[in-house]
Image (cartoon, rainbow, N blue to C red; front, side):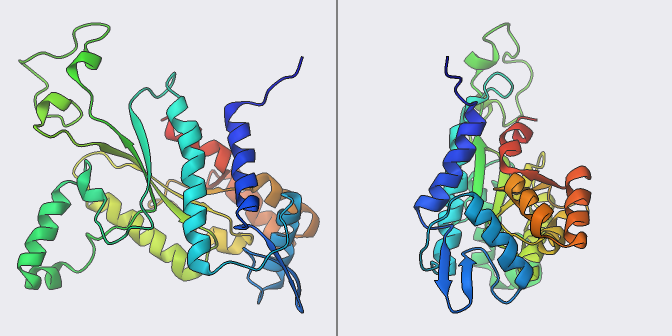
Length: 294
């Protein structure tokens, strides 16, 4: 009897296959040798580790895409993985879920359409009417997510399915209850930042946006995570080390990167990998749907 792989295992394989099929992850052959599309060709360790992982995933030979295209394709593929996994976890996290890839449409303030950030729409309108207000506030209210995990407000029919939980006498303020709003808003369950690779400025941008998400909410903070395909541990650590901003950093091929570091990495890289994984700061993409169920 053939045993079929579990849903998350299959989705992880599909993610890797799409990275390869779309040439998002590819290997360029030139005078510098074989360079994976997520490598920093100016850094030897990056080239060695990225190539090792790319070969494990059977990446083909192709010219590297423009950076903006790589980033957009990476966001789309990560969103597709989440769409295939997280909404299926109804046994542990029931609800009407949607996963939106909004990174390619940054001109629109997507967060302001959802709880607990709907007040940002009024703030943006006030700043548009009074530019001096914007000069005073700065851009600390501006947040540009890549992927949003959203949950619909819950109808009384669903709330009272097993027993009468709510009626007209109590529970009339929470936006979680759809009946409490004329136009019920969806709720931001998670905000996911996608970084195909990491440089110091990118990790700082992610930290700043995470803090803005925490400061600007009116309600519970959503999950705030980062997903990357960065091959070097020092750059991953620039975002993963410490607490207080992002919940966790997830790597799309952590097992493969661990194998690459075991074989080709420096002692410092091996120590950093151990520190981040055992210290609960770095996990594999396959762990993300499970962590979002909390």
